Amino acid sequence: MKKVTSVFWITLAITLILSFWGVLAPTMFENISSNIMGYISVHFSWYYLLIVTLFVIFCLYLIISPYGKIRLGKQEDRPEFSYSSWFAMLFSAGMGIGLVFYGVASPVSHYIKTPPTAEPGTVEALEDSLRITFFHYGIHAWSIYAIIALVLAYFTFRHGKPGLISATLEPLFGDKMKGPWGKTVDIIAVFATIVGVATTLGFGATQINGGFTYLLGIDNEFWVQLVIILVVTVLFMFSAYSGLSKGIKYLSNANMALAGILFFATLILGPTLYILNSFVDTLGAYVQSLPTESLRISPNVEDERQWVRDWTVFFWAWWIAWAPFVGIFIARISKGRTIREFLSGVLIVPSVVSFLWFATFGMSGIHAQNNGIDIAGLPAEQALFGMFDQFPFSVILAILAIMLIGTFFITSADSATFVLGMQTTNGSLSPPTSVKFVWGFAQSAIAAVLLYTGGLQALQNALISAAFPFSFIMLLMVFSFYKALRKDKAKTKL
Image (cartoon, rainbow, N blue to C red):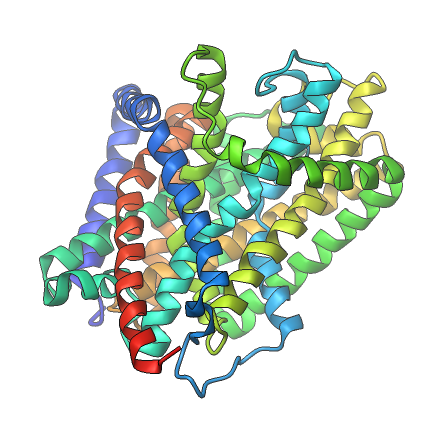
């Protein structure tokens, strides 16, 4: 592994230490991670809400400002992909295990068990359930991805910098980013990515296990999830070995096909008119409530404040942890587009796709709940399968859902091994297969350790903790980018 940098060895060492610690002292590991997460969520909830809102405002400002004319590349560069291909890839990036895992579970939970402010089971709680889900998967989430992708694409394609997070901070810190400080930045970014992807793999393993439990009665426990992780690890290693052009290309196409089948089957077999009416009504409510919801922390109502920590802060941390991984992917496919064109597409298209998905699956689950089926009483990982159980061809749909989760599992891990390899080989666009294999095993190991030490709660603890330091780097990236933009504007006389 001649191409690897010190970032690889240091981050790998941290990952291995945490893995062994989790296996050898799971109670201590879980307690300490819970305490760290608790401290951050209690004392810095305001910070998460504020910075993500600032990301949204900054993106909207760039769209309407003269800076929007600047290209992600040289001024003569033009996009490599057509709008249809680019939107399809953004859609693929926007789809993931999270949408499948929470598609039914989030809206139903917010209606029956965990409404933000209303009484559970009321009409107000029902209306809030889909609106708040839109909020967690809408432009706030995509502004986080857009910031990373925009800054990386700008410095890589317009200024010829390596595709490293540290390289984007050179306008602020100069050559210091080529030394230990730059390595530290890249280590934080890589570690946040590992934990973010591992968390998603953990959710995927529990939901596949949930599907097996619902269909076959197989126990929902750690050892089953470990076998699932091991099997999928072998599959995505094979995919990584075959290369981006083969393995992940075919699996991504399979993702699109399976997701499309499940979406249209649910839309047709479910309460179609109710879904469409709810989508339109909630879209209006979402837009109206954005300013208030963005900064709502309820300092005088403990229950509401705890809800913000458990849901909104968790989701913002999840998106921040995933931002280096998804951002690099989006940056690579966006060369040649203007900043205005890029941000308009990245903020709007994936958000609308997510809204349609949640309206279809969420309102189908709520409709089943209101017709006497206790979807809310099922574990979150089984909610989707409980909803399918009310449809014709339920077994076929459940099998397709397990296949979709599996392919998302593989493509997420496969893509992440490439990005982690790139970030630990000085921005190489062709990281060695051995490096990708190491990161593949590391991701799976962390996912297994987190499930072993505390299940889904441990996943949430690790995510919020790992995202926190990287959020400061994101703020610095915004300032660095804006400083470079001002110089660029003066040169190009926009």
